[in-house]
Amino acid sequence: NPVNAVPNRYNPGRLTMGRESQSGLQKVLIVDDSATNRQMLGDLLSGEYAVLLAKNGEEGLDLAQEHLPDVILLDVVMPDLDGYEVLKKLKEDARTSSICVVFITGLDTPEAEERGLVEGASDYVTKPFHLTVVKARVALHMQVVRQRRMLENLANIDGLTELPNRRQFDAVFAAEWARSSRTGRPLSVAIVDVDFFKRYNDHYGHAAGDHALQLVAKSLRKRIQRPADLVARYGGEEFVVVMPDTPLEGGMEVAERLRIGIEGLGIPHKRSSAAICITVSIGVATTGPEAVTSGEVLMELADGRLYRAKKAGRNRVVGS
Figure (tube, helix red, strand yellow):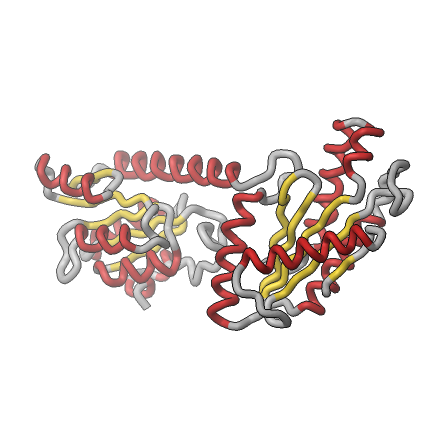
């Protein structure tokens, strides 16, 4: 194991939480063929970050792909794969292309620095190390990473309901459709529409309408129990649920649980013809039972079943 090639106190274990380590710390990967340099940088950074160490370029690439560190400190001069080659491979891989790479080098010529920056390095640290400077530069890049991630998250979150927005849904749905097509595993989607919501807004006012949507969103989020499932705001008073590895029966069961939960909120709706409180109609569709040739077709099926749920009196789930 590449991590175990160095002292165990730097081994955070298998990190299974995406960009965050199990401790919640940001991650830094140090790739250097010098054991002394790895030890020195590890000692310097291990108190503030989850530290991963690799003794050559191949091990560095393996760890980068497995753990997706926030910052990589990468030695330029190494046997076999040098830093430039490692950087090129990192940039060619969609999983690692955006990772901040800081070169560690004794080559302090302008030409060497220019080459690294042109090829995608974010910064340089020259040997011999000034440890306070290394620490400050890593901290600066970590802050940039945090800020970028915050902006990315904000771009994917609906401001009113704090659910994932249409943009995030589109990305997740495309990925899950591709996975379902590749593996043959079922993929279910449910489109959720708040019944007579325009009447609600007209009677109670838009502020009350916004608050009602927030309560509906909270109820949906609470009842989506699997980490792989996604509930998002689809637009206006519509929400959508993506359920990977879920056959139609399971999708119907989830949708009914969502419907009951929202009716159970008991939000008064005097202008509804479906009930005395806010309710939802839900259309469910699944790959497998029918000839679903694309993600668009799957969504059209769910939308058609939502339409039928409305025509049948609303406050119900239709899945066939």
